[in-house]
Image (cartoon, rainbow, N blue to C red):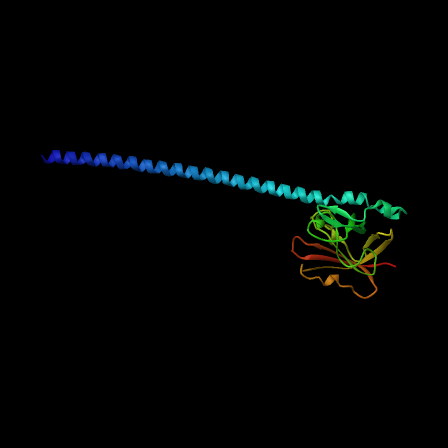
Length: 231
């Protein structure tokens, strides 16, 4: 009798043990499936984010690159040869409109050492800075005062990317709207913080000078090159 009871009891234990094992295996299987689904969701989410980021970066680069090359069209309509032409005033548009920005060109800056030649836009904002160097402050080209010209540093040869390569006594040519070319020599070069605008002040009255500004993308500072006119 005891043996039968024990036998029945043991049988129940075996059934319970098998059932528990089945349940455990089922839980493990469910957990494995859940992890698999979570991994798949995270994988596709990561791919989506990465793909979206690449599209955004590519589009931003395309827009910046397109705008940075718009100066070619401006330059072709306002080149140095036309500055010397007697009919210059009739061949060059006084006001130019690009994406609702209205501006004019006050001259051309040419620096042989770093192989740049760009029109200078009359006003400055974030969008115009993507097109060409802009007047930051000061008079028109070759007028008395301190003409400050700002341009982007694209870390290549575009705009003022090579401005840091200029040294003391290097020459800069500035063409004004009346066709006059004035030479300047570099008298100072330094770096300051982006909030320092003391460079825009004229060094003294009745002096024709030039200040070039661009960003140092490595340090977050601002590169300043100052030049004075050569009589």
